[in-house]
View 1: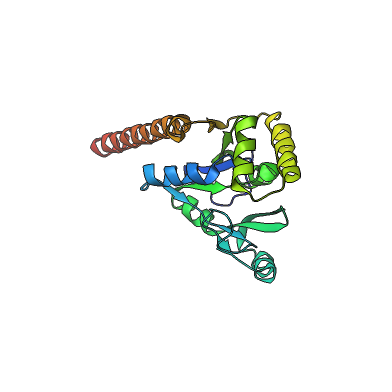
View 2 (view 1 turned 60 degrees about the vertical axis):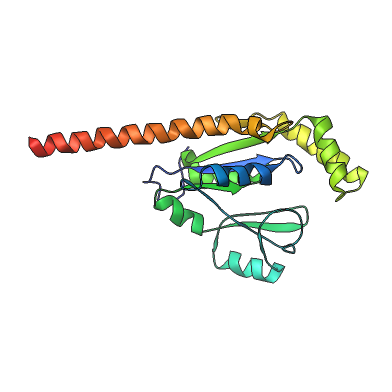
Length: 211
């Protein structure tokens, strides 16, 4: 897919994490931050909700502050959901341009918007949870009424019926370490591939110099 991202010369990846509320996106991203601290930057989201709402370490903004930043094109991506504005700052473009892999907490409903901007740079990471387990998690955290929980489950099931091509699939129904295995295997292979390409490039340059 053609990208509107202006600095697509680097080989960096944008990992776009999506999953239903209660699927454990924060837990997965925190574990990735711990496991790959030198290789992946985790971007903070800008959200119009208080800093102590939920478990996400986000940048809290008022609606006025958010729209002011949006008007000045300070967001690479932005959307509305659940009565709030969400934004991903343009700093992620700087990181990608420097060849740094980036991970963001995205929105399934706005995946196409992200793909239009980043094209093949973007790799979806889909976190799924069995419906019965997801329901238990949503009820236990006590943020929504039972009716709201049911609505979230319906939306989650509807989205799960739409497969995402090329996505890294993580099943977080049980042990987090088990859920992380597909991503860690993918990323380890990515690093080995980059290392191999670097060695080949250096060898070629050395041969040219001798020639």
